[in-house]
Length: 150
Ligand SMILES: [Zn+2]
Ligand SMILES: [Zn+2]
Image (cartoon, rainbow, N blue to C red; front, top):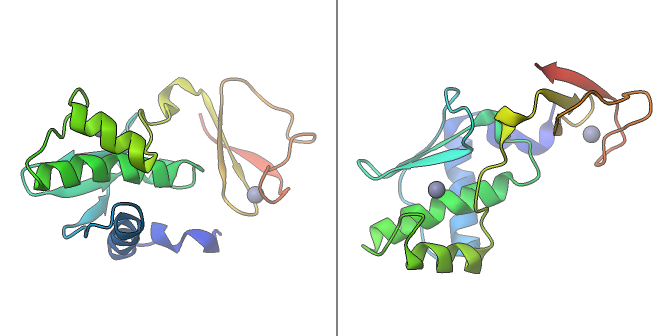
């Protein structure tokens, strides 16, 4: 359905993708695992200091901001490895997040009652209200939109 995002297929692909983003944006290696977690609801990702792995929400994977969600979790990850302030309120966290352009907060899917997706490329469009799918097309590929979740 969505060939661009083979990253969605497996945890190995996801880990490789996170490693790549980490090197490109931080110049630091990501040495642990990234795992898809279907149980995350309103958050896009989560960092676990206990074993240093990252969880990501597959529902967010097709949002245009998904890379920025990964960057946010990587800021937690790298600061923790370096024994610096890795929590949201810490100065180190705020500075590094701004530096790499990570997302401050995950896009909130739970306040969007309706989620449309493109039939062609799989792009997701969370919306508060119903949209006219005859008129409104995918902004990325002009494909037809369909209602996916309620
Ligand atoms: Zn966070
Ligand atoms: Zn599309």
